Image 1 (cartoon, rainbow, N blue to C red):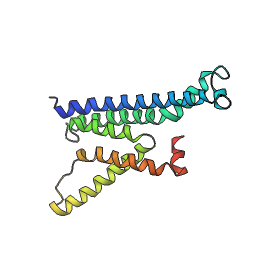
Image 2: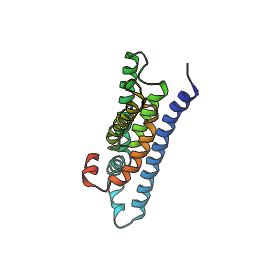
Image 3: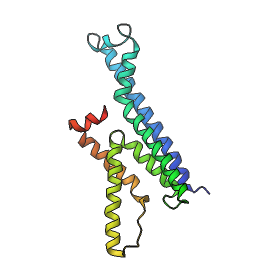
Image 4: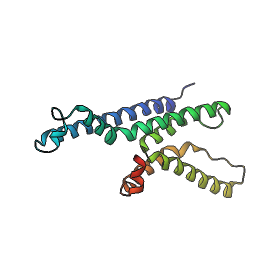
Length: 172
């Protein structure tokens, strides 16, 4: 049975993907127009002086690649989590939880998805320790409420971490 949350989570993932595609397309177009307006310098990087391939590669690497990588990673995690959940009889994740995981991985971008996975596990470990202290060793904590808040934290951390060379070197 499909719940309303599952419907919205599934739709939300594809809306987020479309939003990032439109944003990357907008950035690519803006870059093209900016280079085209510079008659003496950057305009020589565009046709008829150079082929369109240079600009296409530039736009792909600078505006699209991070989210293409995170999309592939998110879909791999989705497939792996779905397989693992089916193997365990549906005891690990709620159905909509897989979409929360996928959305979090995708919006974190690359290399943010690496920190996203680490942050989710650290937050889960801390929550499990706290719950175990207060309610005993048999109390359980679900990942359900960690996926999206951790993604928001990683998005804010990305803006801070991009100033460091070791972080930006993960992009290549």
